[in-house]
Image (cartoon, rainbow, N blue to C red):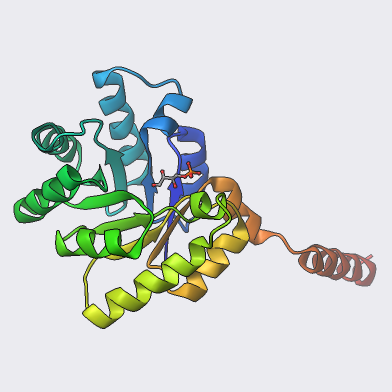
Length: 220
Ligand code: E4P
């Protein structure tokens, strides 16, 4: 399972890269706005910076703002030309699916975002999306079960032999990451805090303190 960090914060991206376990980055317009990035050139520049930080071979999802087919295609092509790491993120709409099919023909990688059902997952796979982003946290927020959706899509994609990678998004906790791994997600994209939360176990801290104390006693 690949680990992506879901942020436009350069410090978080640097920290995740330095951990040595990062495979990519996803962003969205809300995350860019949270960092105070606005305007066409500053946004494009920010994507370039992210790509430089993560280095070669790590996919960076950059989302289109247009909602019509022509606009998405024009915007997506511009984003794809920015850097070889860029994956064009496209919303799950009629025009979005059409744009994904066009990008597939052009060999441009895509991430179909805002996915909340198995039916939508089938459409994105048929269009040849590279990644599919089901938003599990937002489903849980409505008291439905986001992990159940991941399991359902894994079952369908396996049965149908679809090539699209399931990128579990809208992750809220370390437990979500473990549940996604068990459900068979190909990728998880998470805030840095959810990834670093995986490190913690009190028995690790207690065990390490005891090892160091015993070593000190024996060597004093
Ligand atoms: C996915 O690509 C989105 O950027 C993200 O995971 C959405 O998460 P949220 O529901 O926490 O906003």
